[in-house]
Image (cartoon, rainbow, N blue to C red; front, side, top):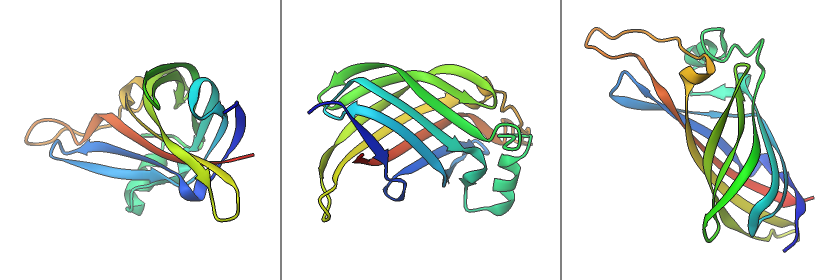
Length: 176
């Protein structure tokens, strides 16, 4: 297959995260508004151009009060930093259909190099004849590296919110 432009199918895609809460459980959430620019041969990502953006105000943890706190200046500060972005800069093939994708991750006005494990999940035609591809990605960031340092000490020791944030993406895209 040759390199092509792929349009994100947001209805069939997701950007999810989880973080330790009270040092005893994980709280999960999702972002409801995101976009991607994908130029790739899906069977060989080593020459791909990929950019991803997420609207920080679209965070959804199924708790309105917590979501309000997350978009406040204590965390995302969505008013001043409305998006987080990832621009891939290198692709390392690690197995058939599997890659380590590194790039510039920007959150809260800070850019750092991060690496995600990306898997090509397959391709096919939908019932209307549109060519589709699927990818999944997994990785983690330390929120304090991006200035998201709000926390509260627990009476039993430890902190309310963990530093490591696990990120999981499920992406479906249509050939443009």
